[in-house]
Amino acid sequence: MNAISGFSQLLATSGDLLSPEEKNEFSGYIINNTRMMSMLLDDIIASQLMDKGEYKVNMEESDCETICRNAIMAAEHRLQPGVQMRFVPSVELPFRFVTDPMRATQVLTNLLTNACKHTREGEIRLGCTLDETAGMIAFSVEDTGPGIPESEAEHIFERFVKLDNFVQGTGLGLSISREIASNMGGSVFLDTSYSPGAR
Image (cartoon, rainbow, N blue to C red; front, side):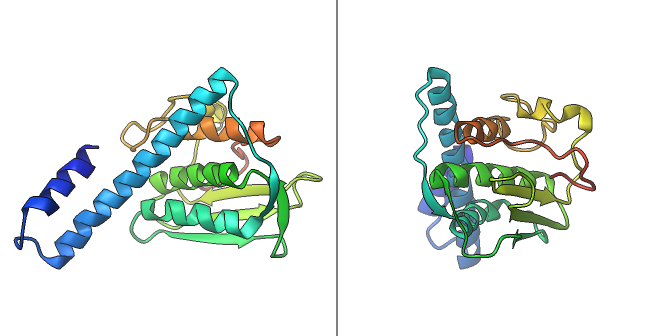
């Protein structure tokens, strides 16, 4: 909120003192922080609904590529300079499956955003395949960040857990993602055999 308020005031009161480039830069900060706030609120609301047993999913036939592209669009503003984000499907597109498209997008957005926070160089890949579990589509988010110790593989999915306190966030994203996936009949886990980086 401080960033949104501060840069909004600068834009409102600076008149002609700011160059067009500075105005664009400050507007970008406002947009990015507004998106972050929106994601945080979504996670908090989802958390409260789950605690009350009132969380609902609306399962329907959905398009795999649309869900993935929407998640990438929602997360790519968090990419660090020089890092690339790619969609690398292993299914033949177009591919349709039954899920709650809004919830699935929220889970993938959370996972991609988490990868963006920890990946300072290299790339982040969003994949999907039918080859991992019979009758299920498996999504993966792979990054070239520092990775996660195997000993923390379950701990990171607890609420408010952050392995790096210098990285923005509340520690809710992974926990909420796992709970949402569970509500849709799926699961979220860390691939402890993957390196370097995290999957």
